[in-house]
Structure formats: C-alpha cells, structure tokens
Image (cartoon, rainbow, N blue to C red; front, top):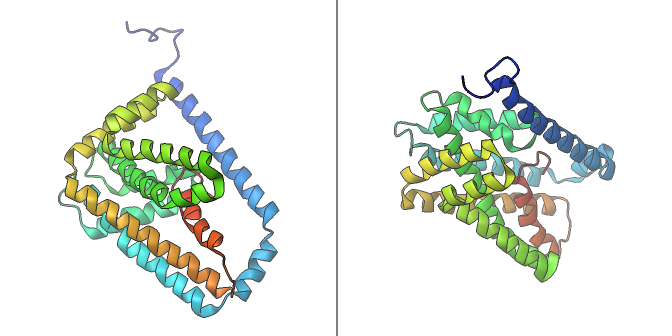
Length: 263
C-alpha cells in the first residue's frame, strides 16, 4: 500500500483542501481589511460628492477609454492563447477575459483571473493555468518597468533598488520561469506554485520571441492608455496636479497588477 493510504492516514483530497481553504481565508481577510481601510479613509459620501464635481465630458472620455482598453487587451491574450490553441479566435479571447473580469469582483485577490479557463474547454487545465500565469506576469513585468522612476522619487535610493530587484525577478520569471518559479516554490513550499512553474515553462516553450515582444509592447501601450484615463479624471476635477502627482499614476497602475483586489 502507498504511504498514508491506510485507515489512519489522511485522505489525499482532504490534505490538499486544508491549505487551499486556509489560503482563501487569508485572501478574504486581506480583501475585507482593504475595503474597511478604504471606507474608513475615504467615506462613500465624499466619493459621491467628488463624482458630482467631475466634468461629465471628461467622465465620458474616461468611460470611452475603458472600452478601448477592453477592446485591445484581448489581442494580447489571443497571441498568448494561440501558443497552445492555434485555432483560438478574438471573440473567444474576449469572452474569457470578460468571465475573468466578473470573477474578480467576487473572488479575492487575482485568483478571479483564472476564471477565464472556464471558457477554454479545448485546453487542458495545466495549459490554461500556464497561459493565464504568463499573461499576469506580463502585466506585472511592464507595470514594474513603468513604476521604476516613481519608486526612486518617492522611496529614495533604497526603495528604488528594491523595486529594481523585484522587477528583475519578475522579468526573469517571464523569460526563465522553470528556474525562478521552481526556486520560489521550494522556498515557499508551495505545490501550487510548482505546478504553475511547470505549466508556464510549457507555454513559454511554445511562445515565439516575436509574439512575446508584441505582447510586451501592447501591454506597455495599455499602461499608457490607462495613465491617460487617470489624467482625464484629474483634469475633469479641475485639479492642478504637480509632477509628483503625475509620477503617482504608474504606482496606482502597478498596484492593480499585484494580487490585491482593491488596488
């Protein structure tokens, strides 16, 4: 008999589910704490009064930009998706991203992003997991690159170097996931991260350099469009932002690339 298969040994499914539920519990508590902190620091009444002050024309521009982002983003996902599913279409990529967007509203952390695999029935779970992880790594990769100047300005040399080091790790995880993610999995003793490392490595082996370069370029463009959107909202409030305020925009965008729901 295999170890642990006897009467006294824990059931394998139960052993796996306990750490997973503990992880979900911590994510839920973190999300709840973030929401409570925001409501404490920024009362809903003040948010509503700010919205009423916003120039409707600039609000319309911001809404239009949201539509533009949602039209462009599926192209990056489609390029990555076709590494494992050559017959994938733009509408399939768009549909899976919309499912993920809905899941993010109710599932703590970035785990909602993995909801897109529900629509990708033609792919194995491992391939879908790897494809999604590559897409999220690209978001973090480019977000860190854009935020590097702000990290030095606001945090000084020490914080800037820390962000530079983190950027290097994420870049390495994109290009050599088998090495970086496997090391992280050993340090964190995470079986899930180990599975992701294997899945990402398979996907990266199928992605051409040209496809990866296009995906990075489009992601940088998307960041730029989002900066314009935030700037439109600031201008719509008739505010007079300083250089420091503009430098904050990449930090706001960077926060959205990490596994915190209320970026």
